[in-house]
Each structure stands twice: as C-alpha cells, then as structure tokens.
Image (tube, rainbow, N blue to C red; front, side):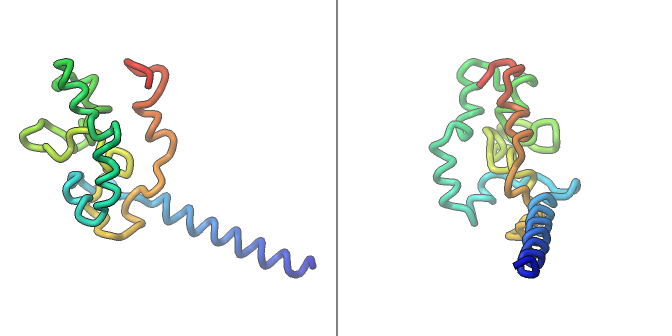
Amino acid sequence: MEVIKKPICWFLLIFVFICTTAVAQGPSSSATYIGVSKCQMCHSDTHKSWQSAGHSRAFELITNVGEEKNEKCLPCHTTGYGKGGFVDTESTPDLKAVTCEACHGPGSEHNGDKTKINRMPSGAVCGSCHQTLNIHAI
C-alpha cells in the first residue's frame, strides 16, 4: 500500500503545481486593455450574464449622482482607470463600468491563450474595491 501512495502523492503535487503556475501567469506587464466588446466575441454567454449584473452598471451609478469625473470613484467604477485603461466615455467607452478586464487583467495578449489572462482572480482583486475601509462599504 505504501508503494502506491508515494506515486499518487507525487502526481498530485506535480499536478497542483502545474495548474497553479498556469493560472498564476496571467497577462504580462505589457498587456493592454481591449474592452468588453472584444471579450464578448468569444465569451458571449458570460457577457450576457455580466450585462444583468451590478458590475455592468457601476459607471451608471456614479453618473446618476454626478460623480462620473471623480477620480476617487473611477478606479472602482471603470476598468483600468489610471493603469492605461479607462480615460473617458468618448475615447474608451468599452472600459466604462467594471468589465471583464477589471478582474481578469488586460486582455490584449489573451486571444484564447488561457495562460495570458488571470482566470481566477484573487480575493485581493475584489478587495481593492469591495472593502470596509472604502469610501462606501459594499
């Protein structure tokens, strides 16, 4: 029985290492934001689901209260603000709201390569906006 356990343990250890390494890679520092319309081309079901979620209306919420230019609101109510992403509604309309790339990282290098996108964002990604010390706790 001991002989069987060792190979299985090694296999599981190597399998977990490979899986977590592939997931941890994500986009490189040179990746750029491409916008929700490009993500929708391959991920139409996910896009449809996102459209009915609160993240899709994040920019609309701050617009409704006249804060759409407030630099304290934009990092959490748009995608990539201050990091090469959202600039304004005219030049980067696909980055207003909390889109795919807000959580999964810039998608310019993804093109179906699962190692070039953050497939499983960490709690820290969510916590950067959804935290108790934020302007408004969510």
